[in-house]
Every structure is written in structure tokens, then in C-alpha cells.
Length: 361
Image (tube, rainbow, N blue to C red; front, side, top):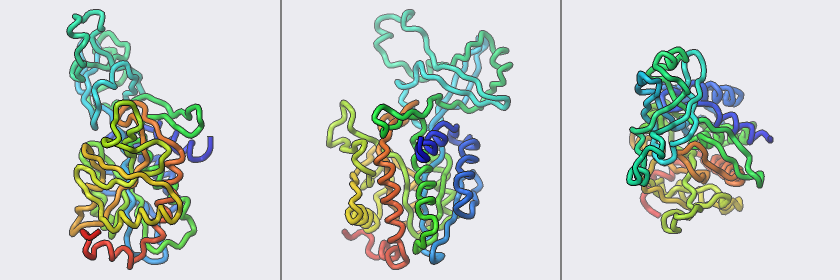
């Protein structure tokens, strides 16, 4: 494995669901320590400041560290565990998947189950199973066994899936690419810009609790008080069966995406156009995206105080919000090159131009 593969493996395999980001937060802190001064907001988001030639403009790069997961809600007398989601899950992807419950005494492995189909009527077998009818089975036969394993109500439950390099060597499969990709980009950009005199101060921000309401972005932007922001995210790849081109034309290997619209943010047009210009000048292929059914940390950041010029740059991913999603290495590498080149353009004059007639094409 090369260094990027090792970084992605370590980041994706380390647990960190909303409100329980401790393990991955420690790892991110370790990776960012060599590059700048690190501080945090009061709910756990990390902010690494890297000064360039000048103290301003202040450029915030944000990628959320949390992944979707569950917490223990109830333990039955027979030793089965009911759970509630933290973040958006599609119930159909859950059955038969392994999970890890993090307790104060260690990890406990279980599997998500439901009433066996052999015991269902034909009509019930054809119905979609609801999450409320599912449970986690750790192989126990009583509530006492579950408690002996150290499990209690409120314990976090993490999808159990490893990082795999697939057959062509360029596609990677793992849990938590949403959004450990954004965090990995923060680290790779810090390394790429090391020793370079960028015309701004960078605030590399790994936010918490994005999946439950962009909470870390809401608090960390208060601490950073940026002049412009770049949101680093995954994007939804549409190159799978059943997706029409008008729904999504994003493809793995087609380059990073620029999000032109999401449910809670339209990017600053001048910043968006600058991203496209930088990509064209550096021969970096990019894709354009519309996210009607989702949003990002940018929803909170672009509304800070009087408004912050903000853009979203994504790495396409298949099968997000499941136990295993997929990305392409070329998209990641090109995103690093694009963002680093963009940062070198963001001096005081350019950034101030974003808010001069910001709604004009």
C-alpha cells in the first residue's frame, strides 16, 4: 500500500459516529499536528491553522469526521439489542450486516437480524422490512449475558467493514468514505502545500456531527470566522444501474465534482467559476453535480454572520450510507491537485471580489 491507501485505510476503519467521534478525532489530530496549530470548538471539531504569506484572507476547508452508525436503545430479556440510527440509513441495506458495539470495556461484534423469512407468510416475505423490526444479535441468550459483555443503553454501534483495494488497483471499497474522504483531503492538502507561501491563512477543519444536522460546522465556523470556504465531501456517483443521466451524470474516475446546487446551499458564483477556471488551466477534469436530496457543512458555513462565499468540491462515491462505499483513486488525486491550485489563487483581492455583486454570472 502507498501512503494514500494507508491513510484512507486508517481513517475509514477507525470508528467515529456522530457524538462519539473520539477515536477518529485522536487519529486526525495526530495527522494534522505536524502542519500547524490545532484547536477545537466545544463539541469536538478540530481546526488546524496554517499561516501563509499573510494572515488574511481566512480560508476555511471543512470536511466532517463523523460516519453514520447507531446507538443501543434497548436490550430485551432474551439478549437482543434494539438500536436507533445516527445519520440517514436506507433500511434495506442493514439486514445481515455485521456491527461492532463499542463498550467501556472493549468491542463486541454482532449482526443485524430479523424474524427468519422461513417463518413469514408469502405476503410478509414480499414486504420491505422496517428497521424497527430489526435487532442486533451478539450470540447471547439473556439480558444478563449482554450486560456481562459490557453493553449498555447509549453505547455506539459501528458498521463493521474493512478497507479493500479492488482488482484494478484504483477503486477502493470501505465504510465511512462519507466523509473520511474530506478529512483525508485536508491532510493531503496540508502535505502538498507544506513549505509553499500561499497568499492566505488556512483553517483545515474536521467537523463533528454533520450526519445529524451539520452541528460541528455551525460551531466551528464561529471559531474560524472565514472570508471564504471550501467544503470537502463525497458526491453521489450515478454510474450504476437504474440511475438516469438527468438524475446524476457523476462517474467514478471522471474527476472531482463541483456542486452547483444542494438542498440548502447555492455556491458563490464567482468562487464556483474560479474553481472551473483553475481546473481548466491545470487540465484537471471535473464534473458538475446537483444534490436535490441532501446537503453539506456548507449549509451552515455559508450563512455565517453576513455570509461566507462557499463552494463544495466532491469525490464521487458509489453506495454511500451503507456498510461499503466505493471511490476511485484518480478522483481523489485530482481533487488534491485542484484544491491546492485553487488555494494558491485565493489572495485578498480575489476573495474580496466574491462579495462584489455576488449574484452576477
